[in-house]
View 1: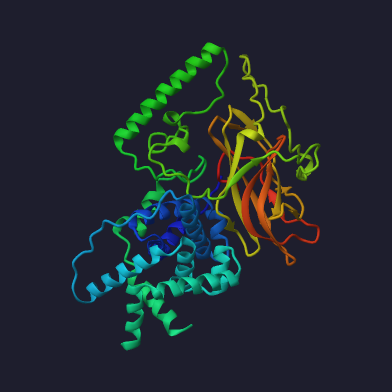
View 2: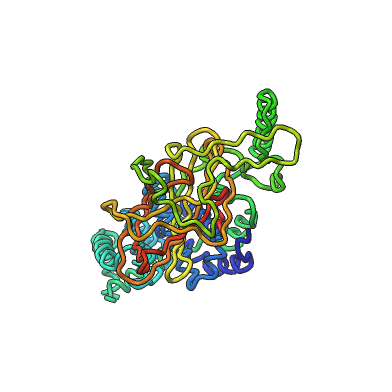
Amino acid sequence: VFVGDLESFHAFVRTHSRALARSAWLLTGDWSSVDDLLQITLERSWQNWQRIENADDDVAYVRRVLINTFLSSRRRRWHDEVPTDEVPETVVGDEAADADVRESVRAAMTALPPGQRAVIVLRYFNDLTEAQTAEVLRCSISTVKSQSAKAFRKLRAMPSMSELFREEVTS
Amino acid sequence: VTDAERRLASLLQTAAPEPPESLQAGALIGRIAAEPASGAPHHVRRGIIRWTPPMLAAASVLAVVVGLAATAVAFHNGAALPSRPSAAHSPTGGADPSPPDSPTRTAPGAPPRATSSRTSTPTHHPTNPGNGAVPVQPDGQASHPGGSTSKVSGSTTTPPPPLPTCATSDLSGRADPPIDVSATTTSIVFELDNAGADCQLEGFPAVTLVDGAGQQIGAPAIAMSGATPVAVTLSSGRSAYFRLDVANASAPCSQASSTVISPPAGDASLTVSYQADFCPDAQGGGLSVSPISASRDIQ
């Protein structure tokens, strides 16, 4: 059984793993879940690589595998939200500000239901259109619109986030 | 795009950290490279367990002990064992951290599958009372060969008794996440898990898509051309696979909510959730199905 070209798969991983890992972090909020999610996603992608590498948009398909794996893992609740015990490192200046943003975003994202997290990541981090997001999530564009509007409102309303949103206006 | 939306995008960019070294491309490639490139059944859970040398040693010892015990039992019963190389003897056994013969669903420390969100409800509704919904057979190949699977080998010993066909009621099904293979075609790999005794499946399953009201959409799946069925042994607790390709034509489309699957020579069907639009062609066609396979990799 010929599975696919290993070289092209490695090239894909080299090009896209950073974005996939960061997307997965926004979805899950902790590296150990990211580790599981990426492992499963890449194994599954490699298993289907011959078909994926010949597809029009390989990134879209692997992204879909990632999102599907994430959503089904949450539905199965095998990896439920674990409060983080990572102590934020002491940092100064810009890095400290970034760390604040990171903690606020992590807290806000993990407070959203998984489906809304997925919409937010696809729309605003992966920068997909509503139609592309609907394609990944296999739902209608109107669902994407309503879910992303709902998630957006929730995020903005969270105290730590509303501050961050305001900063933009003043700066 | 509003200012607030732009702001959210930039907040997400700031927040998403750089991956630690263990999750950078090099490390990930190293992990996937440990996978066999082809041949042996892949399993998603492989690699989730962090195998340490003591665990590997224990697994090898266990494999040998189980192998010896099985041989003894088989000898005692006067029956030849169906040949099934154990992990310790497989070509990749030494380097492969996941013994393929261990029932992976009970592998210690393995998280439950990530993919099987879809509910699977074995049902016994009376499809296929005769041969009503069996798929189109590929160029004369028997798609439901039933018990005619034993092949007499050249040896002089008694051939192993043919295993019975798996009872549908012992099987449960689940679907992997769909993969788009072209702009119009989606592939889904289904897994059938055997909860009963050792049994066999051979041939093409009968597959239809149904909507939320249970109404069939389009025609039943046809057999993929060029695919030759082989008998697949499902030991108790193990799984077999098949792939469904959904080729979408243009509208009108219907929202499918599940797949109804009748395993080859089965007497009932099981339902696995599958939520997607299906746009059959003018003749209702668009579904094609692979034969039952021992491995997830179905080309």
